[in-house]
Image (cartoon, rainbow, N blue to C red):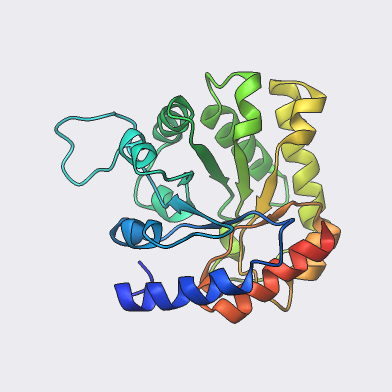
Amino acid sequence: MNPESTAETKKIFTTLKRSVKKYRKVDVVVCPPFLYLQTLLSFTRGGVAIGAQDCFWEDAGSYTGEVSALQLAKERIDYCIVGHSERRELGETDGEVNKKVLALLKVKMTPIICIGEKERDKDGFYLAHLKDQLKLALKGVKQKDLVNIVIAYEPIWAIGAKAKKVITGEDLHQMTIFIRKVLSDLYTHRTAFNAPILYGGSVNEDNAEQIISEGEVQGFLVGRASLDPKSFTQIIEIVHTSS
């Protein structure tokens, strides 16, 4: 639920838009609260796509408080985050994530599917948890549609100001290999290796270079640092340089 006002949102977005024009090799997506979507869409976007933080799977109906994928698509929203750890913490299930993914693909939007474990056990049971999250989120998704999906790996233990630690590039590389193995089992090897994988978890301008160079990810799902245009632009520059 940031920024706190429309004025602050305009200020951050305007500064960001000016800064990222030269990074043409990087896809930049801003996902503000629903309240600010129309405000940002009224700007000349100039290289920055707009996404939503969540959606509902039904097209219309008696679902007070919800916003459908169809409504978002009609307002020219390009992306939508689903399965974010904070939504899951509020009770969102894997089945609901799957319904949102299918609804978004139906209206030609790009789902950003978040998966991640709360903690890592020494026996590796967390890997089975991640595999289930991915398989259930993609249930019913055809191979041809995987090119329109982004996977975001966000280990919950590495997220936020109280994070226990930041993931190392080596550990992240192991996770990207694991995710692509799961995708290969579900689809084909080629399809799996064409799917973009992002990392989210206390990413900032100080650790982004090491994470992306060693972690074999294609970009980041940025949290707190995205509210600071200077920090966010530095992260974008790092991704640009690595691509």
